[in-house]
Image (cartoon, rainbow, N blue to C red; front, side):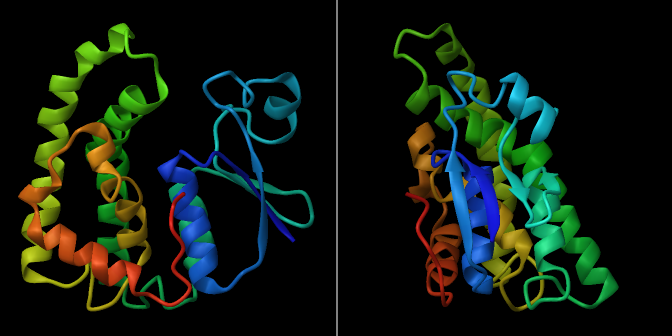
Length: 200
C-alpha cells in the first residue's frame, strides 16, 4: 500500500490525501511534527527526502516522490483530473506554478505563523506583507472563477486541488474570505466531488 509521509496541518500534504481519495486509491499515512524537526532526522534525510520536508509519497517498492505538485501530476496523469489536451495541460501547470510561487508562500505562511507558532513570535511582523501579497493572489483566482466553474476547462483538475488546499483554510491566516464570492462557490463545487475528504 502507498505510504504518505504527512502532517495533518499541511495543505501541501492535504492535496495528496485529497487526490488519492478522489481516485479511490488506498493509502496509509505517517505523521511528523515538522515544527520540532521530525523531518530533519538523519534517518528521514537519508531514506525519505534529502530536503527534509513533507509530503513524500512512498511506493510499495520503496521509491519516494517528494514535492506535492509533482505527486499530484504523477498520480493524476492518465485520469480525469489531468486533461488530455496539451494546451489545457499547460494551463493546469501554469496554475500549479502560480500556487507554489504567488499563493502558497503568503497564504500558507500566514496560516503557519498564526496557528503553529507562539503568539509572541517575532514572525508576526510578517503578516501585513503576507496579507498584501496573499490578497493579490486570491483576487487573481476570484477573477478567473467569476467566469468559469473551475480553474481549467469545465471540470475539476489538479489545478483546483492544488489551490483549494490552502485557499479553503486561508481564514486561519486571518484572510477575509467574504471578499471572494466566486471562490466560495468554487469551494462548494470541490466539496461535492465524490470521495471528497476534509483536511482535518
